[in-house]
Amino acid sequence: MADANAKPNDHHKHLDEKYPTKRGIRGNLAKIGFLFLTSILVDMKCIGRDNFPDSNPYVVAANHQCFADGVLIDKFLPRGHFKWMCALVGADLETDYGHLGRLIMKVGRGIAVDRYGNPVRGLIKAKKEVEKGNICFVFPEGTRTHDGKIGPMKDGAAYIAIKAHVPLVPVYISGAYQIWPRTQKWPHPSRGFLKRRKIRIYVGEPMHGEDYDNDPHKLTDALSKWMHDMEVLHIDPELG
Image (cartoon, rainbow, N blue to C red):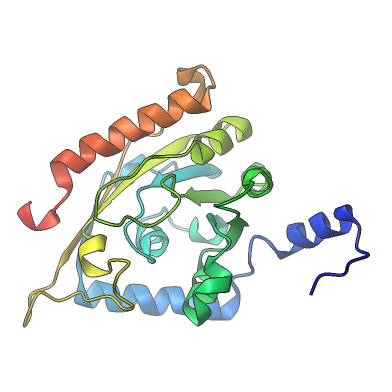
């Protein structure tokens, strides 16, 4: 329980020290183990991998299909970039999803944001981390898809990229929803005996705030259009 006599500045200092969550040995081993199993059980490829910047920092903005989206993208980051990866995540991930949620927080070096209240504190913290050289993953829909399709997007990713003066890299994930929809507790990578499901990750060319008048709304609109264009072409990787 929080100390009733604690000063607001003490509370903010506590949050600054807590986030991003420390990855540690457990988080690194979980990431390695998950990607090892994924490489065996899933047919996964990345298109446009060269669009990731050679050097950090930058912001990655992706659609949100399943719990593991961040780790799936991590597999294709340039060498050495995973060390710098952190993620803006809903605060309920570490309180409402048990051991799995807390493990995801560790792997992703989560920065908690209040999805149902005031998100400003989390956004400012994420911006500061990017300014320190980190790569921030943001899922602008704010939650996992309910039906595999892209939902309305918030301005958080664009805000961080513009305020930190870094590129925003758009990423579209296809196929992860079919394997691990929010209605299932665990992933189901197989379509039958020796039939692996497909995941395709598409990386677009980096977007720059100055090309959109440094306006988060305009940059988010451009990101949303790119995402929906990709969805029309690639919503079902089994058809490709």
